[in-house]
Length: 112
Image (cartoon, rainbow, N blue to C red; front, side, top):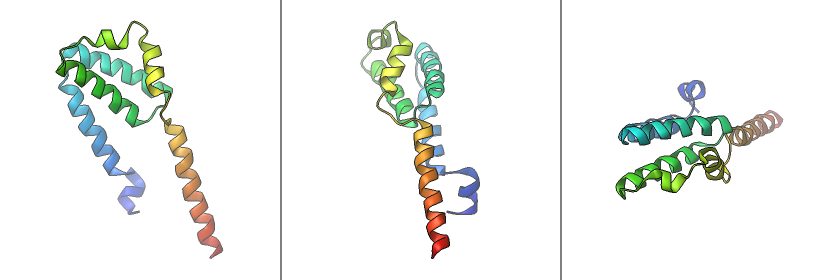
């Protein structure tokens, strides 16, 4: 791990996130606004980036199929978001795994 990566983090994930947000800007205004509101809710639940990606893909598919997203999501938007996020890791789960891996590597290195 280089100095820059140690300070900033994994740049590939940041690039992927920026690309996803560029795609979101191409959505029709009402879909884009709904995506941002739902994305904010997903941030609060702590889900990972894959869930945000799945939500964006859903909106993109609705646009491509000329289908009303409300038909897919329904009136319980929070419930839909929770269902979408139910199978994903949260950011804290990912951080736990990373912390465990890094600390174990440090402790093993000191024994050698």
